[in-house]
Length: 225
Image (cartoon, rainbow, N blue to C red):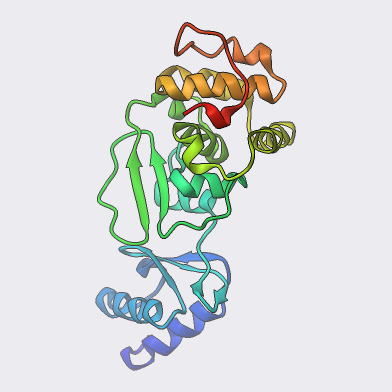
């Protein structure tokens, strides 16, 4: 590919694509020239910069390029089991909130590399069973939401429980995997998970979660600060 035709060829290839990630290695040509062209495309709104060397082509909107789905972002950025959305990204992924975070956030069950760009990686090195149980992004998202349920969930407690129950019924969330993974989660997560499982009609699974405190399980997650 001649240098003078490099940028137009990259632009044509990128703008004709939809819902995919792009890296400099996807193109022939001098790496520096390719990287500069992709950076310019991000500057004009034709790409969304995720982090250094990684871009996303979604749907152009008036507010900019739409972000990648959290599940695809988790697989692309880390490519390891037990990774999923964190913070507001987790609540949004599960349909428990509507607020769109400024940055996509992912929880990684281990050490994380530097993460310049639009994605933020947070380490959950102690949560080793997320990895050994090979949790799906949606399952990780639920554990992350349980870290700060009152601060992240917009729905009333009953509606939120019904929503999670629907995800369980659809097999998007596997209760048995969550219960086993809970052994390496913080005490407040285990406590809230026990309560949530009771609320979604799975008291049998709730009693299998390692107890966080020696007190009865109560309903109404909204008061479980």
